Image 1: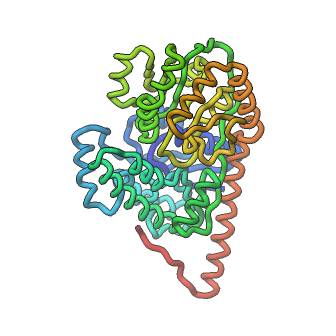
Image 2 (image 1 turned 45 degrees about the vertical axis):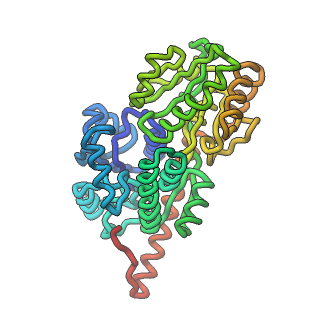
Image 3 (image 1 turned 90 degrees about the vertical axis):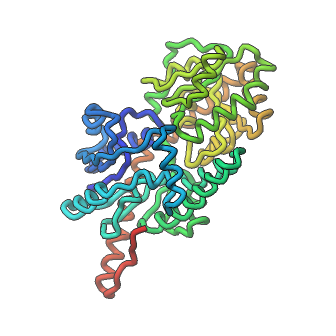
Length: 423
């Protein structure tokens, strides 16, 4: 296939869940012989190196310059205020680009692509209705569900009101956007059924999350610290920020009652300022910021925690921890969409007392922790390599191309016009 792949960022450094999933998917698709043209917005943060390394996952790279306001800047807060008057939620509005829209039209008109793939919901804001290619929307999350959960757990009344507004806008936009595409691909059965139910979709498929099982495997080069917990993830993503705030405020004090020596390492780019300040005052909380390799930090820990309350999609971090043979304690939301069972591949806990109890049990019962970790590693290595995941995605694209071809033939024969319209 010749694939036109739409994105809002370059993939290097490959340092967060969405980038990791896309990187491995595209690299496998390219290895299988599919030709990828990667069209993306580019804020220049990755520099020339990110553009050079793009050839690892695509055959042709097209970058459209685009800038967004840094979080917590004066301009960022001004845009949040102005967004109250916009029909688009803020996380969509900031990626609207007339230049990208023109580039999509140019490429779709000049090149003989077989299919257009919109990776995440955000690039869809720039897809013109004039494009007549078969189209696939790759939904890593049900975005509106993330905003709904964030609104539900927010205690500040003004923030809660704003987030409720964002959730409602997100729901309307996501519903309408999903209906524009020939096929929607979710990353779990749960997300697939959620979109069918909430958005009235018929053509929704799902592909599982994968993991690089060769890269994520214990090396034995780092000695575990007997009381260390670890969390990995981009700390500029709201669900991760909320997860660590929740853990530190409500769960960690309960763990400390039983295991006073416990330490927590938070690994991920752009940690929020109050977390950095806390780590300076509390030596038991280590905040690394972005690192080149998360594996040494995972190996150093005895327990991997996923206290996520407001996520969507599936958590790559859990598969990575499973492949590293780590015993895991997660909320149900944190493990949502993954074929894992409580007390078999990990421990699930949804209130602070149960979560803390699971952590303490794993810290104190080394044999049980080791058994849990080994069992998890066996499952992920057998079933969830990226070669299998990308082959499933490619088949969905090929089926979409064939279905669209059959529809176009029917339209031509019967003299009908397809319904389309820009959101």
